Amino acid sequence: MMERVNEILQDPLYRTCLSKIAFFERDRIFCGHDMAHFLDVARLAYLFNLEENLKLEKEEIYTAALLHDVGRFVQYEDGTPHQLASLPLAEKLMDRHGYTEEEKARILRAIENHRNREIRDEKSLTGILYRADKMSRSCFGCKAEKECDWSAEKKNLIIEY
Ligand SMILES: [Fe+2]
Ligand SMILES: [Fe+2]
Image 1 (cartoon, helix red, strand yellow):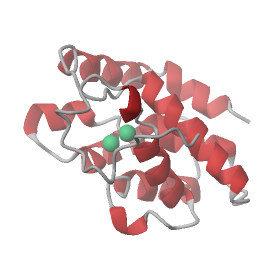
Image 2: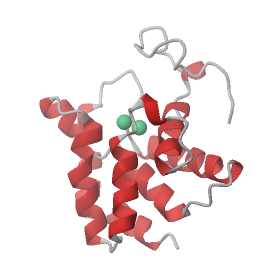
Image 3: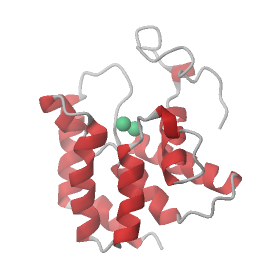
Image 4: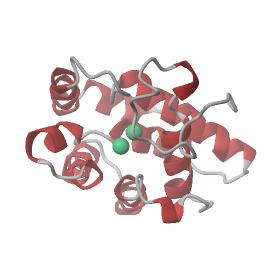
């Protein structure tokens, strides 16, 4: 059931993207885009899925979470917003590991909108990915909280999950 997620995890293209992100973030004091973040997002989104009884596929949720920031290094390289830069990379990885057109469409839509506040209340993969991504950040324990440009409203200053 989680077979394709684990294949992506070991895919050389995926590992290369993660290494490039880690290189650009080596001195970053703000939130990173690493495996810990992807898994925080996956597990929060899966919790929302259970609590809200959305009955989404676990593998689809984890795939979206693992891939949503995969193009972050492109944003560091040339300024392309990473919700867009991640799309071709995510699509290529899903093609390599046998995702259906329907699965790809749902996952790509969620990735593309993970910074679009307007969809935050959607009861869908797109909605839970947005909320999990924002809630994953532990601002209450962050050394850089004062310097961070997230709005006070967006920052997580109490523990909810
Ligand atoms: Fe992101
Ligand atoms: Fe993220």
